[in-house]
Amino acid sequence: MAGSLTLAGPLEAEGPVLEVIPLGGLGEFGMNMTAVSWGETLVLIDAGVMFPEPELLGVDLVIPDLTYLEQRPVKAAALVLTHGHEDHIGGVPHVLPLVDGPVYGTPLTLALLESKLEEHGIDPRPPLVPVAPRQKVQVGPLTIEFLRVTHSIPDAVAVAIETPAGTIVHTGDFKIDQTPLDGELFDFHRFAELGGRGVLALLADSTNIERPGVTGSEWDVVEAFEELFASTRGKLVVTSFATSIYRMQILVNLAKDFGRKVAFVGRGMVEQSQVAQRLGKLHVPAGLQIRETDVRGYPSRQVLCVTTGSQGEPMAALSRIAVDDHRHVSVGPEDRVVFSARAIPGNEKAIDRVVNHLARRGADVVTDGEKRVHVSGHGSEEELKMMLSLVRPRCFIPIHGEYRQRSRYARLAQRLLGAGGMQTLLAENGDVIRLDAGGGRIAGRVTTGRVLIDGPGTGEVADEVLRDRRHLAEDGLIVPVIAINKQTGAIEGVPDVITRGLVLEPDAEGLLREAGRLLADVLGQTSLEDRTDRGLVKERIRVELRRFFRKRSGRRPLVLPVIMEI
Ligand SMILES: [Zn+2]
Ligand SMILES: [Zn+2]
Image (cartoon, rainbow, N blue to C red; front, top):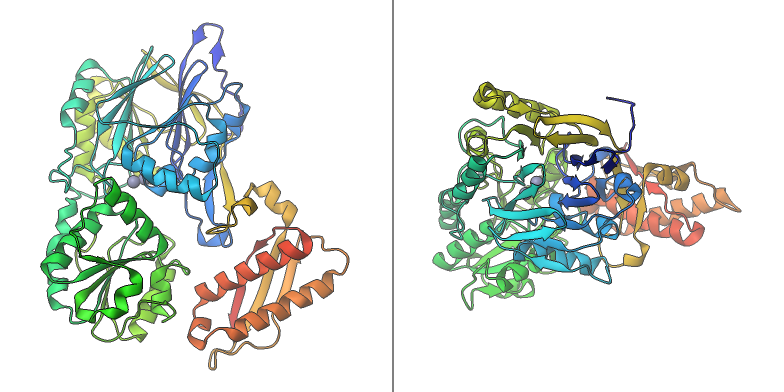
C-alpha cells in the first residue's frame, strides 16, 4: 500500500460506494477522526487533538492532516462528536471550515465545545445540535443514531450510521461501568439489537486491550479517597483532568462528608466545573464551594482544592503551587497532594519535577501507583470481548491505539468470531476502506499526517497560526542555549541564540545578541527555585522569544530551548 496515492473518488462509474477513512487515532493515542462517506455525503466522527511529544517542544497541539477533506469537491455534511475529551473535540475549531452542516453531540459535549469555539473566536458558529441516546438524525442518505456508552466523562455516546450498504458502528471511547455515577447505563440492549439486525462494520476502541479482566467503575476510587480525607491533617489538593467530572463529583461528596469546602483551581477546572454544574452533571451542595481567592481565609484542614496540572504542565495551577508561585493556594507540611490521573506517556518527567517541588514544600504526595486514586475510562479485555459479542459485525476494524493494541484486539476478535466468517481489517490512518455486502477491503490511500499547531494558550486569538511542517521550515528554528550553574542556579554568561532556516534582516547578529540579553534579563528576574525547574524555564523562554521575533522580524519560528547545567 505504501507509496501508492490514489484519491478516493466519491462517485464511481457503478454508483456511490461506502467508504470509511480513519484520518487520525490509528497508530497513536489522540487526534481521533474518522470519515464515513456514501457518494458525496461525508460525515466526520470526532475531530481530536494530540498533545505533542517532547521532541516537538514549542508546538502546542497536533491535529490530523486535513488535505483529504480540503481536496474533496464537497464539504463534510456533518460533524458527529462522541464525547467531550480533547482527543475527540480539540481539533474542531480547525476542522469547522471544512464542514458545511451541523455539529451533533450530547449536551455536555457541545457545552465543552462551545467554550472552545469562544476561545478561538469562531464566528459565525455552525449549528450545534444536541442529541440524546437512541435519537436518530438524517444526513442525506445516512441515518445516524446515538447509543449510550459509559466512559470517564459523562454524556458519552457511540454512533451507529445506517447507510444504503449496511450499518457501521463506531464505539467512541468506552468502558462498561455497571454502576455509573449518574445512573446513565451502558445501552447493552441497543447494541445487541443492532447486532441482531446485522452490522456491516464495527470500529472499536482498543486502548486497554492489554489489560486483563474489567477496568472497574468510576466509584472504585472512593475507598482510597475516604482514607485520604480521613488522614489528611492539612489541606487536601487533588489534581485531575478538568473533564473528569465523575471524579469531581466523588470529591465533592466526600468533601461534604468530611467537612471541607471545595475550591476549583486553575482556569480549565473552574470553567469545566461551571459547565458541568450548569448542565446538572455535577452537583455541589449550596455553601460548599468557595472561590480560589477565598482559600486562604479557611483553616487548611477545612479545604479541598481540585486543580489542573496532573500532567506536570508548566503553566498549570499545580505547577505554580508546587514552586510557591500561586497567588491563592500554597502547600506545606501537613498538606497532601493527590495525583488522580494517569501519566500520559511522555509526561513522566514533567510530573516528576512537580512532585519534587511539592516534596520540597513538605507536602505528602500520593500518586496513582500507590493507591487506587484513578480508574481508566477505557474498557479492558473482557469489556472489549463483550462489545464484539454484542455487535457481531461482518467486518471488524480496531481503532484508537497503536498497532500493538489494535493487532491484539484483531487477534482476539478472530478467536472469538472468526469461525463465523467475520473479517478483521487492520487499517492505518489514510487507508480508504470500501465496504459492501462482501465485507471490507483497503481500496486506496489519501494523504494523512500531522499538522502542528502553535497557538498561544490564551487570548491572542488572531495570532494563532496553523502550520504544517513545510510552513515550519519556512519560518525557521530558534535554539537558545542557556547555561545554568548547577551549584548556584545562576545564569552563566549571556545566553547564545542560534537560528536555522531563518532570514533576519538587516542585522541578524545584532538581533540575536539582543535576544540573548533579553533572556539573561528575564531569567535573572526569576527566583532561584523557578530557575531549577527546566520545564518552567523553557516555557518562559519560549514565550519571550516568540514575542520578540514576532515583533522584530514578523516571523514565527519554532523555539527549542536547550538548557545546560554546568
Ligand atoms: Zn475519551
Ligand atoms: Zn479518546
